[in-house]
Length: 313
Image (cartoon, rainbow, N blue to C red):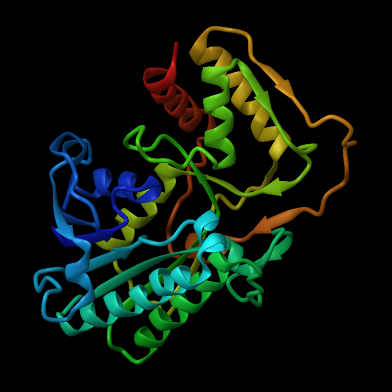
C-alpha cells in the first residue's frame, strides 16, 4: 500500500483517480477550498490537505510516497489569465516537485497534455515528435514537463510525464465543471435536449481514451514501478476516430440508455472534408505491458447513466 497525494484530485480526471486509487492505497487530496464531507465521501476513503501547505518545504507532508500532479489552470482560463497560467501550471508544479524531493517523495507522476505537440493533432505522433505548443495551456504544461524530466535525469526522484489525449467519462460529481469537453458535452445534450449539435462537420480525427483506462494505467504505474529509463509517455487509446464517429456512437448509446430517439445535427453550410489522419502512438506504453481496453460503449453508457441521474427531466 502506497501513500499517495493527488493534486487536482477533486477535478475531472483527478476525481476518478482519487476514487480508484483509494480502494487500494492511502490517498490524500489537496484542495484550495473547504470540501463538504458529502463530496469527500464520494471519492472514497480519502483525506484532504490544504493546497497551500504543498508550496513550502516546511509544510509539505513528510509521509507521502507518490505525488500525482493534476492541479492546473484550465485551457479557457489560461487564455484569459496567461500570467496566472505560468504561476499555477509552471511555478507551482516546480515548487511541489522540489518540496516533494526535499520531503522524500519517491515517485512523481505529472499529467501533461497531448496538445504540447501542437494543434490540430495530425500524422504520426510519438514521444520523439518535436513539441510545438501554440496555446498557453499547452505551453505551460510543456515547461512544467522539463522540471519533472530534469529532476528525474539527475536521479533526484522517479518522475513520469503522461501526455494525455482526449479523455472522457463520468466525473465523480456533477459539480465537476468539465462539460465543455466534446464527448461529455454531447452526452449531456443527449440527456437534456435529445439532440446532439456539432459546430463543425465532424470530420476531424481525435484520439479518445476512456477514463477507466486512465485509471488502470496509473494504478499499475504505482503498484508496478519499473526503472526503464523512460520519462515521457503518450496516454491515449492509440486508435483515433472522427468526431462524427464519436457523435454517432453517443447517439446509439443514448438511445439504448435513455430509451428515446436522439437526433444528430451538423453545422449548417460546412461540407464534409478529408482531414489528415491521426496516429497518436502509445507503443511505448504497450511495450511495457500496459493494456488499453478502449471499451467506448461501456464508458458512454456509464457517463449517460450518471448524466440522466444528475440532469434528466
